[in-house]
Length: 72
Image: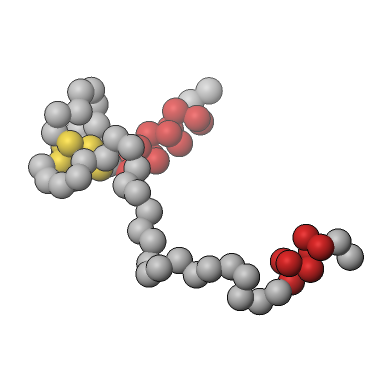
């Protein structure tokens, strides 16, 4: 065996992260309210009110993608 595989097999060689690591919010999402309304169902979206264009909530975006994909 090589020295590299021997080092990997030793327990305790890797440090545990200090506490829980939270993922960063996705780019384009608002930090807090007010959120833009979905143009179809009027539910809050993931986007700030300042977002230009037709904003869709995740449910309506999923349904719209399915309609677009099946329309031929």
